[in-house]
Length: 508
Image (cartoon, rainbow, N blue to C red; front, side, top):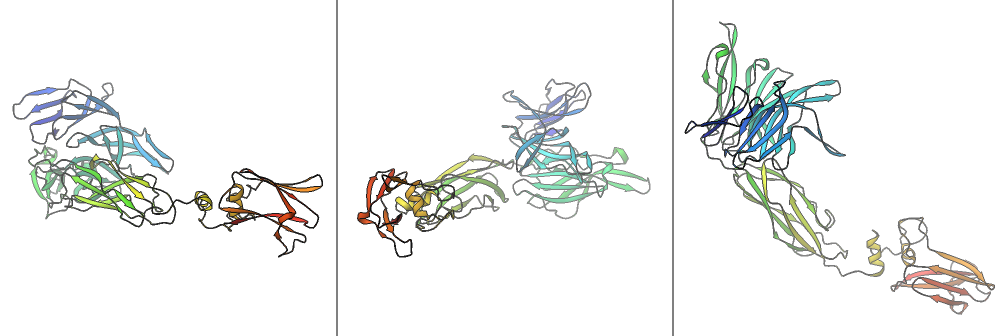
């Protein structure tokens, strides 16, 4: 059974396996008209959304198919429960879920939590365990709350009444044979144990739930009566602190009985005030940043309950490079409890590279424990370096230091300045200047191809008669320039006194 936040509407599975509803104020009853097809049912706190587990009418068994119905619009959505996996190659949905049982809707019906029997195939293990998942109703995206683990059966999720970021659930330890009651803080991403049942898991689980004002977690427990020689069942209440997850004192018996007729956990009618999900927004409070000037600042603001810390993630995109144009920023952040906003400062790195104005956008990631109201905001980063031209610009574009004219990035014996002069790739030894030597009418002619004639360098023709160090000198009248166009330089060696000719590149 499931009850709306004000207790005015209760949903349950009828004896003929339909979804039944009762108005607890007027006593009016109605069903969805799906006799023989409903295994489990849940209703959202606002009473507008119903979720059901579809039952196979032929076998009488629950399935892995879920249906969500909006009672105000009659809109229906059907989902197939699957197991999401992610690795370095990407993500996928595995058809390993046998069937779904317990359902729990978020207060506004946008998230559906559920437990399911999931097949596991690991080294030496071939079986099935209970695990817990969530579906985002709007998109159908499935997330694992607790992945299938052969050591634990996890199930029976139940949200707190006034703190929807808290969920209590059962954990049956297959190693110890005991069942424990835990709390999952969806906002902080942490879990905490609050109780251990006295009897073995074979007797049953706890089916925990929060009391109407979230001051206690109530669950079924067991005790062994020596006189009768049998286990008895009763309902136990464990008070909790204001945080909703820390034990406060010892548990006490709430309802008791005898043998198999002892009470299990019944319906708790909510008495608290629903505070709603937290909503996150991002804005740019310092949208104009610059090298040697102000840093950029994004502000993350949350609306709704803020009495707990909240973890959130985001991505950074744009032309500004993370770690090069601004200092490294963690993409996973935590907002402290009782804080309504926090700033993410983008500390600009003042480099010596002319890049022009760059931009950076922060986009909040989706998460199960908050809604995103304003997803993205952007800032600009101004450059304070004069626009570079010539060799410096070419070097920067090729990933070289701006002034490394004489370096040899690819170790091919041709310096960076010469690579620049002839338009070759400074990082590839296979990329060589196109220079040819021919004899025309008995005279040596050198021809050098280039992609353009750079204005910031000199092409200097030098001659030598011996090749010895210090013997090279400007060729002067011994060389005639036949062509000096943007794409070709042709030189002719005159006279026999100069035996060798070379072309040297110098920066102006």
